[in-house]
Length: 112
Length: 113
Image: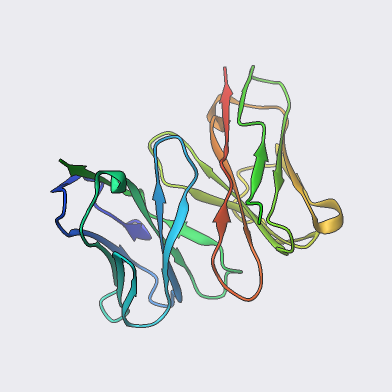
């Protein structure tokens, strides 16, 4: 079992729809959770961080964390073609100097 | 504020040669991380500096890899001698107080032939 699991996709959604990206993690002691967006050939760009159970909203993005279920998700409202990218889930395990463990990423395609 | 920069953006070397990658973190960021992504795999942690000290080098694959951060500013990652399996994209990230967020550089794509 991988430490951080994501569906590789591609996930296709029509423009204007809500895109829902999911991530599960295995280390119950994980403390910090991050979503990065990566365009092809570019660096991972931090878009959301979440540290406590519940929802965190920032513009069109909402991160959701459920530590009991070891589950973190990212919702993108009013999806735009420019949102088409690979979304990486990263987890900071307990007691590790904040090194990140990444999932393989989910490819999102927003179609016109 | 300038972001994390890395040099070179691409490097193609032959097996057995030496390559040195450089990372300049965001100014004032004490924490510097190196990660690597090989083809088809997830990004994986290599090591972590706090200022000039190695905090965690548990992800370094073997002793052909040497990282330094003299003076606690920029960092270098040397691969000597390079092997085919070292090919991939090497990312550097930095983190500053007070948060936990890491900001990534554009990466160096290393190809060993």
